[in-house]
Amino acid sequence: MIDHPKILITRKYPAAGINLLEQERFRLTFWDQDRPMTPEELAAEAKDHQALLCTLTDRIDKPFLDRCSHLEIISQFAVGYDNIDIPEATRKKIPVGFTPDAMSEATADIAFGLMIAAARKFFFLHKTILTGQWGHFNPTGHLGFELKGKTLGILGLGRIGIKMAQRCSAAYDMPVIYHNRNRNLAAEKQLGARHVPLDQLLEQSDILSVHCALTPETRHIFDARAFRKMKPSAVFINTARGPIHHEPDLIEALNQKQIWGAGLDVTDPEPMAKDNPLLSMENVCVLPHVGSGTMEARDQMSVLAAQNIIEFYNTGKVPHIVNPEVLA
Image (cartoon, rainbow, N blue to C red; front, side, top):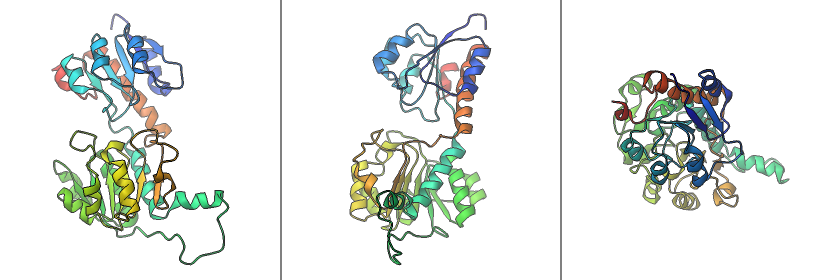
């Protein structure tokens, strides 16, 4: 690498990856405010840079790409990339990198924790202490349910889904069913997981955990129709993307007791309004999209995002790329 390209760093990312970029003598520009850039600010800042290190809160849409078609690479600090217009980036021959598998363990932990928390009403019961409602022992008050032997259903049995299934199978002897576009034969052999049609997944799952990507096909796939097909004793877990479930339909399903409870690390929109009815429901646990929120996961994400840029300029390859056809 003879020249030293300028890279726009859109947020304060962990030093593990930034140090690698500095060692390679890239010229780095840091956005120093504790908020995402507006689309106008992002486009203005990116104009005189060759590369962009961004994340889910940055809107990399067609208007941005039209203004910044000079970019040589975009590296996303995330495993998802629905904030980026991938077809448009591909048309403009801009490779897009991402950070797969860096957050699989952390996100599976969140899904597993939300499952337990919803089944035992952790968040609601904690609030009773804060509001002075912890009273006398009530033998039938605010009862949850045990997870041992319950059926785990997974939509999207990929890296994170497999780790969630491993936890549930080992801890609670939970049989696993799943729905994917393609069967995961390795997971079937390892976990005894059964591939089932989507309707069967809805009808048979005691815990239904979402680990698929947000695509036009999965957007609002959990709507009123889907919730009506689920067991009234079922818990819905979503740690993938908020728009995979239709939030008004989820609220209605919970109010009508079509499902038992929910655990959410993602909402639609984000951030969630503080008066959202989900936050006051007894059987619902909501977190503010912290699935990757461990030091280990964020460090690894930073390293992978940096390596995508370093390898691109040193070898012409991007180790973790969304649109490999650009480099073909």
